[in-house]
Image 1 (cartoon, rainbow, N blue to C red):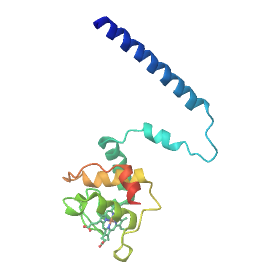
Image 2: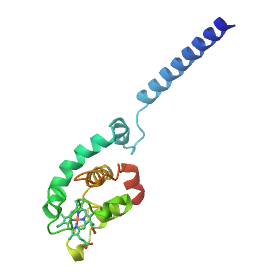
Image 3: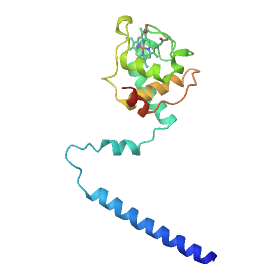
Image 4: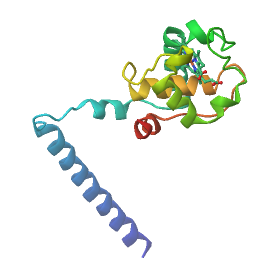
Length: 145
Ligand code: HEC
């Protein structure tokens, strides 16, 4: 009985391997339909874990945000972000980055930055300088847009 089971599962595995093999060949051999952007397939392969977003976010924050919020989030022309309860809400941070507040001196970034870049910056400000509010995924940014 036991050996029958093993034989069966080996057969199942072989069948799986074959069907995977076929579908992989089919996907790579088929030319992309006109107008289909293949970039998302590459993005799926990139890690979107906390450490990756933090390191991407650090650079983007330095370039886009630190002139007003300072390199350690201590504030300047804009409010301090270190220990600021505002950053606890991922939705509020995303919306603030999208829209800024031109009346009060913060430019909008919705057109200048991609979903992943905003996710990285939001993740960075929510998890730096003593803030511990968790990751923001590009999907959440895309849904808020
Ligand atoms: C030119 C200056 C400037 C830049 C650049 C800037 N901000 Fe701001 N930011 C401000 C000002 C001023 C405010 C206050 C706006 C208001 O009163 O609503 C603000 C508010 C905020 C707030 C809300 C804080 C609170 O307590 O209300 C967050 C979060 C924030 N900015 C994040 C960012 C991030 C992230 C970036 C970079 C993508 C950025 N800002 C770039 C000036 C700036």
